[in-house]
Image (cartoon, rainbow, N blue to C red):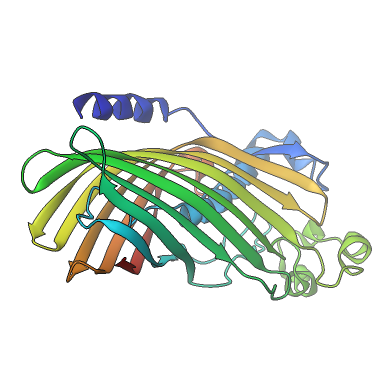
Length: 313
């Protein structure tokens, strides 16, 4: 356990390397801005903030299948909800709010298995899935991933261990050039943020206008401890890092933007097992926001809340 925590501490130290959004493909109409140091820094801070904020919400943190705080055994099936960032949509350098508020929460179905492993270890393995089969105004979402945890009893009530998870997500929506944004373009500090000739050529011919695509493939590693308060009720504290790999394709100008880097994070969770079958989980997660992915240019934190309900079969 000591070696695991040391390795995680070294990884967290490495996470101080600066991560920043960047242009991968295409030529945006505001290319002149990207030639100015002050403008490019502000733009990439805004873009990185918006992308990493969404990715933090989508990232899986297991509540029903973590062996750190679940002492039951067997197959688990249930559902989980995560809150989206409790802040207004991000506004770009022209004062245009990007269209990112579609729901205050995102749900996912979860399943997995909890049992005993070799050398007196406890193992939890889980998977999750979410999909909107019908798009609403071009907005859809697909989430899928898996998690694995290994823990060991340190005392009768205390466990220590590690968790590994992977999250894939794909969401489409009219984020950058929605019809409402186009109609209200004269209210922006820079009305040329959405040019009529470009919008009419690219967006209008499509059934739902310009639909942008956001994808992520993020991997998280955490170490932590779980403690049994009373029979059936356990709590856990976990710290770790997430390797962020996110992409945003902007349909309006056919550009692809990317964000890669390590994000330190911490998690608190509680799990209640009723009559050895019914599972109830609550949690909160905090992620560090670097100055390079903060629209204010200063470090800060993302946070979200989680709730889950399931059964052990």
